Image 1 (cartoon, rainbow, N blue to C red):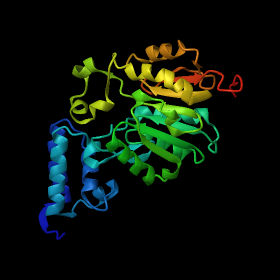
Image 2: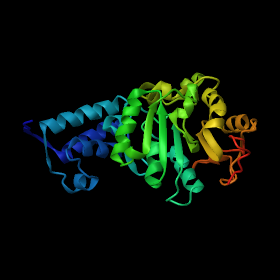
Image 3: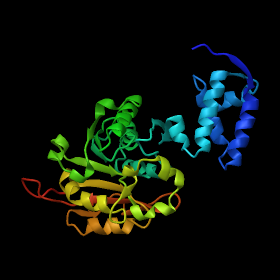
Image 4: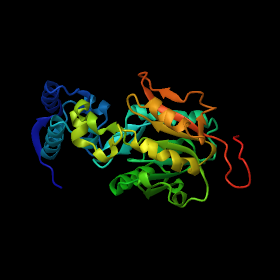
Amino acid sequence: MQQHWGRRWLSTTLREARRRLVQRGIVSTELNAILAHVFHPPLSREMIFMQPDMPMTTTHSHILDEMSARRLAGEPLAYILGEKDFWSLPFKVTPETLIPRPETELLIDLVLSLHNDKNATFRLLDIGTGSGCLVVAALTEFPNATGVAIDISTGALAVAEENAARHGVTKRVNFLEQDMRTLPVNNLGCHALFDVVLCNPPYIARTDTAAMDAHVLAYEPHSALFADDDGLALYKHLREPLAVMVRPGGHVLFEVGYQQARHVRDWYLASDAYQPSEKLKETIVPDLQGHDRVVALQLAPRDIGGGIVVIN
């Protein structure tokens, strides 16, 4: 495509766009991220500061104006850029996937605590994979691990598959279109039990919309946000299926919402199939802000044919 050079310079454009964004309460660092994606290949932040008098084509200007307008309208930056970092890895995101949050990285931290040996061989199940950030991040840490990831959204699964390919784990993960409310289905076609389950399900109560960030409510997929029964419905449903899908001694790690941790913990420990984690020591794990973020459970010994299985 032919590009025509206009009279706009990088420094002038940056100053004008920053003023508009700051007036709307948007941090100016987001402008640098937008500007970096206007150019192909993208400009680094260092290049932006080192070349303030770089001329901009009319094409560049139009793209910048369009992206800035979307941000001023409230669209999340990650959707505008089509990308969000998670576990220091870039992940493609679209409006069909939730935007990965930093606090969700705690799930990966806990997998690392469970398996100190990076060469460990284990099977991982990611329930409600979305962009695939959890299963992909975990598999990049453990080159001998394999995974299965499920989601009800075909659009989300397509994004997750792209992210798996981007980070070189495609051959070690299977993505399946599956409603978590109908587990298990022949143990997802697998002949072996899972060692670790990661699950960040929809957990916001449908009555809590008034307290939510308006931009999250307007742009992120509601099917990945909301659940019935005060947000607890899917946790409660998964207790029985996971009891037969996870090996004795295996772990289930749930991300939970505000004031949900004790409800989820008590629901699972009321079943003889589950017990507190012996290795993690904590059943309820707080995030860096001190909020209860993860419920960690271990599968108790059970008879899976041929006698009682002892946890190792």
